[in-house]
Amino acid sequence: MKEQDRVYASRFSRTGKFVSTGAKVGRNYLKHFSKKLVSGEDSRDELNERNADDIYNALSNLKGSALKVAQMLSLDQGILPQQYSEKFSQAQYSAPPLSYPLVVKTFQQYFDQSPRELFDSFSQKSIAAASIGQVHQAEKDGQKLAVKIQYPGVANSIDSDLRIVQPMVKAMFDISQSELDHYLAEVKERLLEETEYELELERGQKIAEAVSSLEGLKCPRYYPEYSAPRVLTMEWIDGLHLKEFLATDPSQEERNRVGQIIWDFYDLQIHALQEVHADPHPGNFLFMPDGTVGVIDFGCVKTFSKAFYERYFTLMKPALSDDRAEFNQLLRELNFILPSDNEEEVEHFQDVYSDVLELLGRPFFSEKFDFADDSYFEEVYGLSDVYQNDPLLRNAKAARGPRDAIYLNRTYFGLYSILHLLGAEVETRSRVGELFPQAS
Image (cartoon, rainbow, N blue to C red; front, top):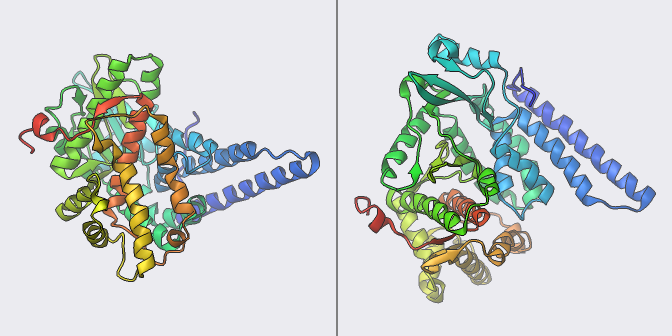
């Protein structure tokens, strides 16, 4: 993959890149409709593929929050056309890397040394490049290391990037401006935290310690002495990405085993720590030869208040919606129902959220859940139709629900998606008390 020797750091240059990409998309539509007029053919798949290529190429060169939004969209299967989801999913694994001179410049800024002076060895080419930074392999005193280097200007471009991508996201999701503002405010907060590598180091160490008793899971050790605000050094973990692991044709028993490890990892964080590794895409899990599951990248961690946690998981109890008074009260406390709602709206939104919460919470309602069940995921992906075809939701003048729920729901959808790809059946009741008695 060709390296980048420049970064689009200014708002002017980044806006210009979006404008030029918009022009390409416009030309794609012109070609599409011209072909339709001449031949009568209407290849919407071909149009989506060209547009997905052009938009992804622009975002991957811009990097930062623009590319992160593409990565998040790729997890919402069923919301975007398949061509977009497949193309944007590349952001989970790879993007055009920065050239080595720009990497050296970052090290000189923080360590007054080049990476090859600081480490015993350092790969000139990046091993992986994604939305916020890229990873190089290094070695120090016989220890293999992963060194993550943040792209220049990422933190400073978040505000302008989100303003620029807002029309694209609004068009793709077809949601009200109030809902979009609510969503992007939370996304902005998480993105700003992801650019704070010192915060990631602190959180990574904390969560790694908390889950250290979970058999079969490995988190990397961090090295503060080789880290800085835009450089993060950790232990190198060798393993296969999910697609590579599945290509080895693991047995159903093995799929269930690793699926259970991943489920328990999230169960502990959410129910014992009230915080969670909120970026569960396949690129953040590595499947090791000895059967261990490695978890990397603790940049996106969401912390929940006790009040939100207790109310939200009370809502998720089976058949709670049968008690309309308690259900209504909790929906009001969590701002799913607003003080300005009239009687018709209250009844309508109670029904909508009853259906949505039952679907999201269904894996919790039994001892085991089979995530290989395609019919369940057809219902999950159909949630987009609920929001896009509901006039009361689409025309909302105020956002509904707490911001805390945005990343918690995304975490569960991402977790469910990984377990679905694994085809795993897991014990879904909370096992915090028996697995981690010190945390319960």
